[in-house]
Amino acid sequence: MLKINRLSLDEARTLIAGARTKAVEIGVPMCIAVADESGNLVAFERMDGGKVTSVFIAQDKAFTAAGAKRTTESYGLASQPGQPAYGISSAIGGRLVVVAGGIPVIIDGEVVGAIGLSSGTPAQDTECAQAGIDSFLGSFHSS
Image (cartoon, rainbow, N blue to C red; front, top):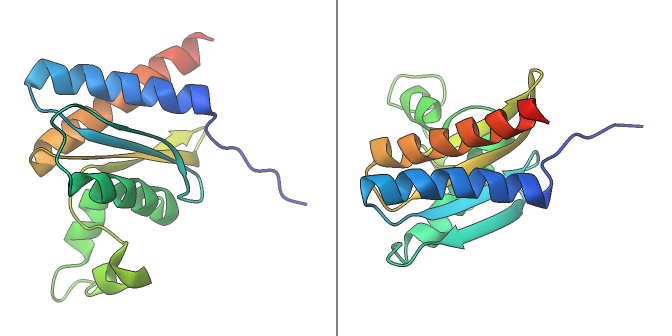
């Protein structure tokens, strides 16, 4: 029997709140997705002004980061021509995202979920995703 650790809905909301705060601070309305450890959506928010196309991209970034247990940015680097994961972005019906903005949530060395953001530049998406994780980890370790 397997014991699975995963993010709760309240924890997903904490991740979203932290990411949203940073998005407001930098003035970029985002689409924010949180997935469980298997890449399934737990919570989603499209801020007013978040791009329509980013709804799916944010969810796929969270899916990729959770399932691959790595950042989407690192997947992007590994999927360049001549690299070991070249062509991976066409796998799973194109759901694997190799653009920055998806980050796994790791507790005690275990991936328990992921956050994915889209609507800004890849750097802005990552900055807001990391803010969400930082907010969550701060509340997680204080409880």
